[in-house]
Image (cartoon, rainbow, N blue to C red; front, side):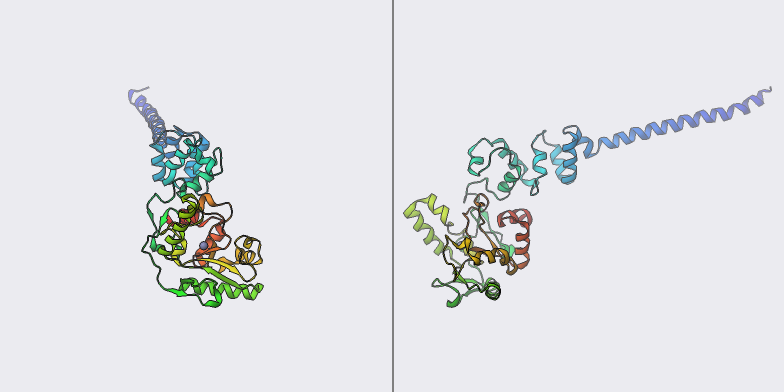
Length: 329
Ligand SMILES: [Zn+2]
């Protein structure tokens, strides 16, 4: 065998060895790269703190920005419970967690729940009901039009007077004077006609727009006679009443004009099933005082416009909850 021949035979072997080294090296490198890439994912980072089930929940429900914030926090066993609540709002996370920690306090007893009722905590916090009434300093956002909110947290202010108030004629009211915004009045008359045509119901208004000044008289009278606690239970403080929007009505019928029995009347049954079609919703439903701030008022309806009223009706939420989750954020 000549030297030259030996060389010719060796070259392919050498090449093969180099090729193997390159291929194996590349695979290893690629694997390492993939591993590195995985360590940069949210999944990997979350798994360093949370179990697989929680990690899956976070990845499904949170935005990248929220995940970044979550990763900057210490581990907390309660977060995943809140994240899966239907009306969870990330911006309120700290307050939800504070409420869990303080769950042994009177807060939960006051709101009729004990233990970790996550959905309830979410609803209470979203609507500010973890705070005392009238102290938060939240102003009504008037850009919401017919959807403006007024409750024990959101203040219309003493000076707010809605535009386009019209007088309701004597045939449709029992009080000396009832006013509504033109749009709310037109919608009310459409509802009036429907109730009359369908069920022979003769709706009649007890109250509509109330100025902040009138509200002050009402409130002060209760306050003077029965004390602040009583007054706060039955009347809004001036500047906070929904009646000041010109979009709220207290409505009864010729058949029934009693606040006590109205909830059992044919009129109420019709309103509950139909008022949203004309833009009105029951504003203070039964057993929702912890969210609305008011006892059940079967006669008090709020005009929101047809589209919004249908959405609120279909959601099954109080307007306070709906506003917080869908309109405010
Ligand atoms: Zn009312």
